Amino acid sequence: MPHPAPAAPKKHGGEQHPDANPIQKSQRFKAARVSDDDKKTRRLKDVEIGFPIVYGAISFWLGKKASEYNSHKWTVYVRSATNEDLSVIVKSAVFQLHPSFNNPTRVVESAPFELSESGWGEFEIAITLFFHSDVCDKQLNLYHQLKLYPEDDNGPQSTKRPVVVETYDEIVLSEPTEAFFLRVQNHPAAIVPRLPAGLNLSPPGPVEHVNEKKRGDTKDHPLSPWFMNFSEADELLKLAAARQQVQAHIAKLRRQLSMIDGLPQQSKASSGQ
Figure 1: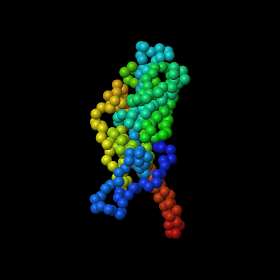
Figure 2 (figure 1 turned 45 degrees about the vertical axis):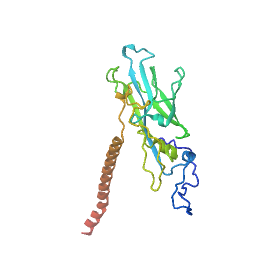
Figure 3 (figure 1 turned 90 degrees about the horizontal axis):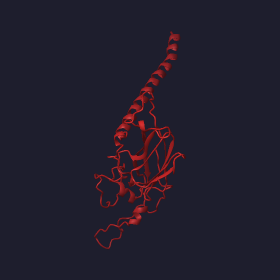
Figure 4 (figure 1 turned 180 degrees about the horizontal axis):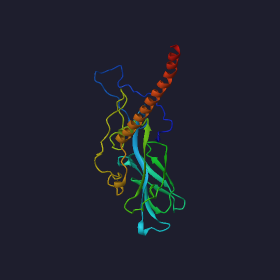
């Protein structure tokens, strides 16, 4: 799981500012005002914000239009696992294609972060994500192996059924700034945890209408019918199934060990008789 957290987040001194001076000249309570600059630099310890992502490619065979050096059209992309707008954290994406392509380094500076091309060969595509300044100062490197042909080569290729290869992952941002937390806490692409006990933030500014269609989401994308469905429920089911298998294997080993441990005792009991 990628963790493009800020490099060695600085631990700012004076994390808890007193709400009021213990020596009061007035009985009226007056909360200390937190400046915008403080919000931009003050980090939230023991807090992680997750952004589930999917990266991959979808390729179509060109059928009768296919030639020796141009047999498939394909699109490589990075999307939110829930098809929300990733530009809330991603500033740009760089796709590094095979050197045989014209201008093999392609930069996409707005969502959706995708690139479409055509060709005949399979190769590895390097994808680099750059984040907004309040998100992270590191880049995230991903790698995807472009597939043009299905794993099952028994049947003929179809122009209507594409080859889809996707990978699920999560971007985890550790110790975010208070300003960033407030900016994304209501965004549907983010998994925002509860704040640690005793940590209270000032209310955020105007909340975006998150139910409205965003310019960069992929819910109505032309390729969305072929997107694979990744959800937390699916992952939990897989983990539960794996746990059951492990528990069954442990129980089997325990039975075998109990049988082995019982053999010498039976032998001693027989010899004593």
